[in-house]
Image 1 (cartoon, rainbow, N blue to C red):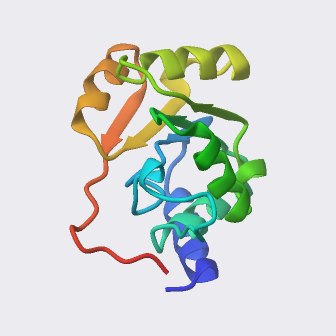
Image 2 (cartoon, rainbow, N blue to C red):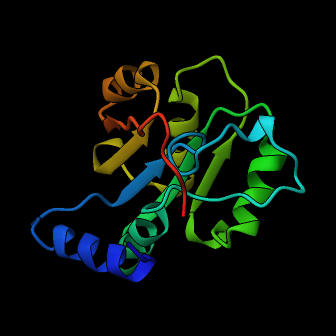
Length: 153
């Protein structure tokens, strides 16, 4: 399914809701892309999970802000990959840093930067351990479990 088709389908789904989040926050590794960036070289050509770009474009078209909350020991690589994927400008906040917290520190920084209340945010991550602490601060959060052998476009 191409990016435009995914975008159209996502826009149709978003159109079903009367209330949408003001901010959608994504983890990076195994949420937007199928790898850990610390295991890759900056010279690599990164790829997204096949529906990710279309969904991002749909959210942008709907006027929904997006942010990144990633607990990565190599934020420099993550930012290089976002640049290579031409996605850097899509996110109003990028909190990419190594941390022992369960993303609550990331969300505090995102909230300060955007002024958007936690209850108006939606978060997607591939790790269950990040979900409950974020729910505790009133962010609606969901675990994504990509198939073991999923392939990006």
